[in-house]
Length: 226
Image (cartoon, rainbow, N blue to C red):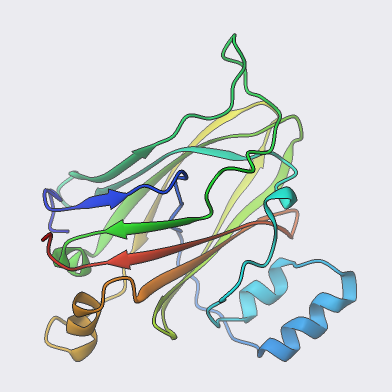
């Protein structure tokens, strides 16, 4: 995805998945330690997400756990150097006949998406990610996103961003600036990521008041368009 992104496209799977945001490297903990910690309160919380850096094979919560009825309506990526829009995905959020936000859980919203980017994406340094979303009848306290990006089982980068407080029935927009992993084009990893579409993956964990409410997954391809 060279600045300008003309060879970039996305395959949209009914949901605008959010890439994450502000880089914070964290320590890790084993799966056994995470399960023991979860057993303390019976719910997933952000403590293990900060510590546990292993890629997850399964979803760690259900769509019904989104008790705040957060619905994503747009996800846009732009290259900060050129200002060019690389990706812009839009989705209709649940509203009534007057256009007011509906307080419903969208159980049909997908939690998985595949992104198709060109090899030049791996050479970008900084991007801006704009996220638009609506909230239902409950105020959201301490909305937080923790995201891990992997190539196969190798952690490439960990991100952590606190979005904060969202009022009921609100439409929200935020742009986050973050730095992509530095990959040397002369290394085997760079070539392997291009040659192995959808072996690059991410887990995105959304928390409200330290409790997991959404878990989304994504896969990425960096090969040339056929």
